[in-house]
Length: 405
Image 1 (spheres, rainbow, N blue to C red):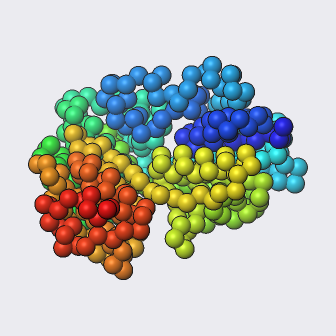
Image 2: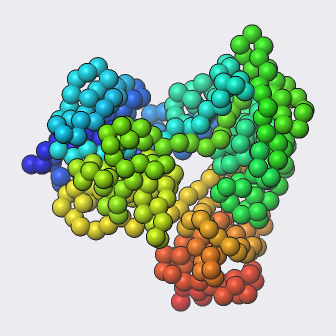
Image 3: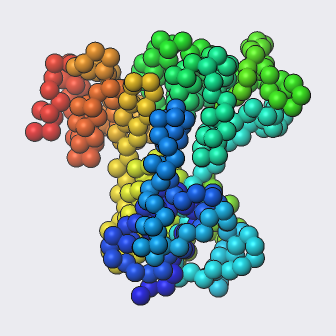
């Protein structure tokens, strides 16, 4: 039996690693260390069905407590690792106790960026949306007729806007860039999503940033914007991105660069230490990237588990993402980093469309809006290295299956 595996973190990647090892009949002792007080759970539904009251928290758990007992996976909750002692192969807990490891996996995730105190980020009524605690706090705020300001027009902000409008709140989204989704999607996708939100009476103000939040007895009551306007608000959600939790690795002397640098096997600069999920900076197509997605957390963790269990195959990312807003499902295949051309294709059903991304003439990604056929076909093309004829692709009468023949 191999020596102990310690997993720092108890999220999607951490659970996927432990579950895959047990599925592969690996019997090594596993200890998972989680800072939250709950067993590992799904995060995406927190800001949607859970916040809407459509799903209870116990349905978000990956497995009930009995599964961890039955599979000899020790989970230490409400605790955290303060330090990695690589020489002794031990992690030092916050209470000073030590835990030996033969293999260490860092699944530390990422942390939402907070608004700085200089603009009122410390005021009551200012939130982020990341974990169960955040969702529980927001549940108390999400009441019909209240005024919500969302700072940031990325996917997190727009998903929060959709939930809030569903619950009857008045919603304003401000985006400092010239348009929503500027960092993550093409103008065509942004235009479609903007139209959808405007149709649900969300106020979207682009090219407008936050100057400061106005304090009334320690609670936010209004926001002064960069165009000089002031809007009254009851609470605020900041959706301004995340930062990888790589400080523990950095202090241990591991290679860190906007995430924990790993090789194609998810190994850090110390071969006894792996990094998986949002915190990992991994190789992809000759570049280094971080993939903040459930898909990457699971696939990378399972690839690492296979390697730990005696395999030899590298992890080859095949990125895909999704976003649910109102009755709209946005599915994304591939990774549009560095695209230089896009093509908008009308879908077969009313309200469906897809945006295709090309780099140096090669298909690299597709955004499918209520268009599952485009998503499935695009994903297969990308993974097979197929670039479709653009004139045929642009014609909505073209059957996408012909590109896969």
